[in-house]
Image (tube, rainbow, N blue to C red; front, side, top):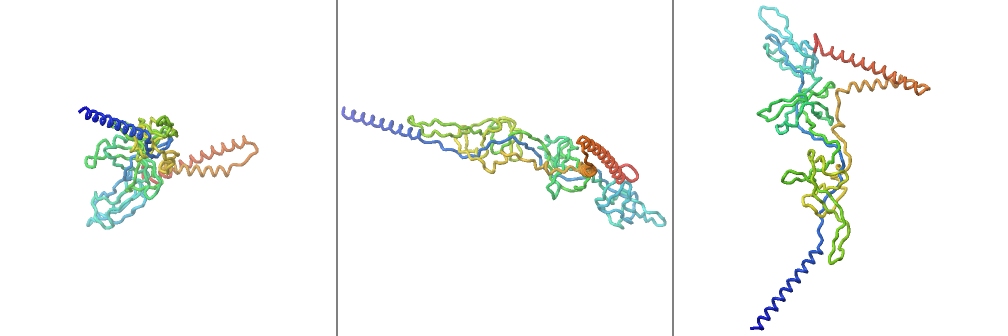
Amino acid sequence: MYSIRKQNTYIIILLVLCMIFLSCKKNKKSASRRESAISVLVASPIKQSLDEYLNLSAEIKATREVEVSADVSGRVANILRYEGSFVGRGETIALIDRFVIGANYSYAPARSSIAGYVTKTYVPVGASVSASTPIANVADIRELEVEIQVPERSVADIKLGQKVYVNIPSSDKVIEAIITKKDFAINPQTRTLTVKALIDNREQILLPGMFSDTSILLNSATNNIIVPNSAIFMDDLGRSYIYVVEDKVPNNKVDGVDVNASKEYRVYQREIDVLFTYKDKVAIRSGIEEGEEVVMFGREFLKDGSLINRIENDPSILEFVTPQTNNVEDNIINLGKTSSSAKSNEGSKSSAKNTTSSSSVKQENKSIEKSTTIQTTNTTQSTNNTTTEDTDLYTVGGGN
């Protein structure tokens, strides 16, 4: 009986020793096993400019437009002005024959109440019309309005005076306009708000009835860190974070021996303040500084303190580390300044031809200043004369 107990004791001790040995071996293997690095795209984003736009389709309309009708009933005897013809204020567009039996009436004129272009005629010659039947449409296209239907969710971002960029159909150029009218009631059928922006169309690039893509400028970042949207993530409280890369030399030792003393890179979460997000880009107000390296793509498998394998100089992140130009502003046409710029160029050429060289630099400077003053005066007078001629052209029998 005693020998059996002694034998069982030896077996238990042997089992305990085996368990201790296996546990130590497992811990040794775990200590020697190296953490695997996660490959991510990294870069040091620079401060740039970024604009936030609300992109919507819009219809272009004339600010001054009238339907021309006859004052009497009768038959259309003749149409004097068709589509595309310019008419002055009070000018006759059509003649109406009252055809009363036994009476000899002269033709009654159908006159336009504004100066502009005939955009449409509604009736042919010989058609019978009443006193309220529209005969033609006349519009003044020197100033146009862009009518934009803004969705209800974006109404709070719209303010009077905001810039609107209007894309010219069939062109890569844009026209800058300003919001001048804003309704104070939502359309119950479409759940949109009507907003209108004024366009100077003296060059007649746009026509009433056109549809155009518009971009309303909502926010601008002029000197902020710009990163891709994929670099930002949020917690349950709505706070925004980004992974910042830090390099250090690890202290990896197994049994007192250095396994790998080379530099390693790890990422750490940092809270940031987001200014706004537009498409796939984010403008950061604060939280990181220029020159700090952050994870641009591949953060989905990271956690605070993760070891990473850095991938640099990828073409997909070049726009965040090199200065970018604003393509919208480069394509803007300033219609209101086109005529004055052309006259200024002509004046500069004339001044250059008439300026004579002199032996003294001081006398030459005085001569140039005098020539510039005279040229400016002539340009101003020319502009006033042109304005007077345009007013006379658009006015027949009275003011516009």
